[in-house]
Image 1: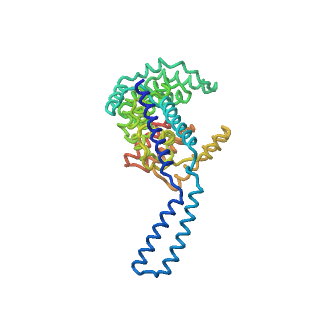
Image 2: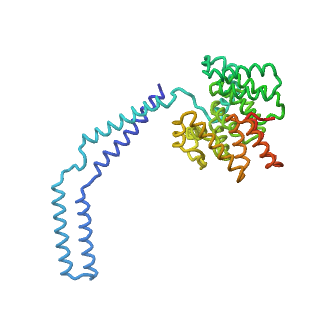
Image 3: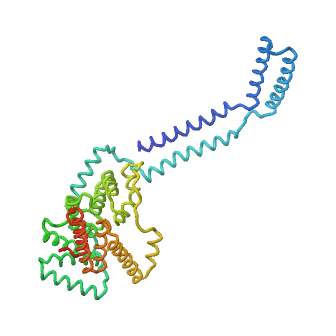
Length: 406
């Protein structure tokens, strides 16, 4: 109650100061003719000084006095004709002050009810950091969150695809050490929306890969966990993200989800810095870049950043291109994607290109189901970039994403 009394008293004091300024202005206001009179009187005194110094003759001085006197009489008559009160009447000022007071008190009360937190104790920066660390350390596990979530509806799959997926499950179950089988199972379980089964298969992929598991393997594991938990980044998912970033500190998806996790535990400032650093090294057309840009302004506000750095806008299809693609039939959209992939393939075959383009082509062929073609492109790219460790690692990650990793 003390807080609300203080808030109302502050608003009333501000209104009182504004009202005092308005009424004081009314008392000090003078008509323009009064100013003219002062000027004319000063001019008369100036004529007398000029005459005493011999600057003007007596005849000229008399003529100037006559003209100034005429103006003085005119100004005096104008002042007499004016009313004693210029400007708005007194009642208008009273109404204005009342409205200002009502807006300050009522508006302040309403705004604080919407945005404030009455009764909340002070939260210094160090205390908020400690609270964030405590929240991060004590947040629920992956299993706890999944247990608390309502049962997700079963995805509706095409009968033929559902049969193939069931057959893949049986095959992988019979061959528990088949790395390629688990890779395919994780991909198809994710495509079907079975994220819990997807990350279970992905965990087996990492176990079978051992130390050779790339950053993408851990990033996919974390992503499946996060999707299974409706966007919540659990401690288990965080550990997978850390493993991905240990192998590739610039891994975009891992940095994206790590930034999300920091926001969830009350550290938007750290999340904002992670995302900004990720954007600085983002490859052209990376899908996670669009996701960051869609949330960056809100995150900057929450992080207290009011002069964000100038990060170039993401390159990629325009909104018109996306809308046009959405209007296509599935067959037309597949044909368009196939054409784009063929165009990239032809350009790389004739002109060559950076390793990022080769990796993009390999991953796209895997998505399109052209595994053999992706393998052929992979072999050609490995020959071109032989000896370049970083390039070969990027190609291996693309092969893993395409499902053709050996």
